Length: 319
Ligand code: SF4
Image (tube, rainbow, N blue to C red; front, side, top):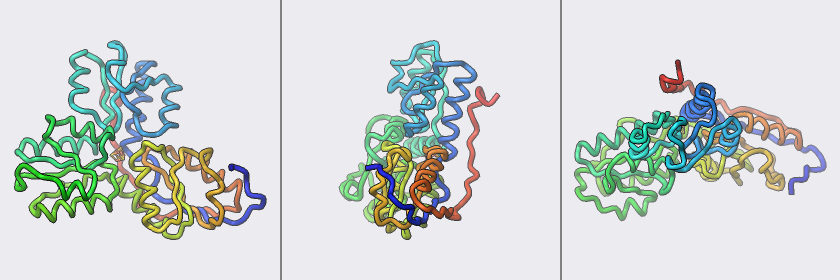
């Protein structure tokens, strides 16, 4: 039931910092917006540009057409590839058809692609730690021939994995995993294969790591943590898990304030609020306003890291 409480009782609202948009999401959205401005609608987008329902709906209203496959794109309109990255076969097909395409793959995902290719060129068998079916995993696996990469999702998978040659192994990871779960999987692999090298620079990206650290800081004192994000957003889902493990009594993923069931607030005196990397800040502000409309809210902000990362747009759009 979404009925307001009869009296405005006090509540503490702790805003995790950083939260919400990361540099890769910001760049991907700008690529679609600028393409719409420069070339006019429709602009086709292969896969949801980022995993957020509100972002996708807004871009649709501006003239973006979201498709699952290149087959659905006409030859004479621009097509954008999503921030999650695509298998090599996708740009290859776009080139064959002479489509005009813009690649919104996050540079930090591209970094993992390059790393996987480097290992493959050095004759190493590659383990990818990630979630089956996620577009980023499909994209990373699709950088190399089939069977070059083995997907590992759990510690059990790591314990059962049989490499061709234990001395010629390397691993890469999805960028939006749980830092702690991934450390457990890597440690299970290293126990079996002590020479397994680490990536030069952590594959789990700065935005995922910072948002998980921030939610950990606030969760321990929270009765409830609300994570603004869509159900298909991997990094948002991880924030819910991290909050629960860090001590929050309850944690929920909500698309927006309208998705809150206010019965969750029974016996809640402190609520934490954060957002996945694809969730726009106005949704967070609206959620805080909705809480303040029902409670005597005292809002405070966690003093986490300020992020300064930004990524360049493709040259054709930056001009
Ligand atoms: Fe890039 Fe990380 Fe944002 Fe994904 S979550 S788009 S990898 S910065």
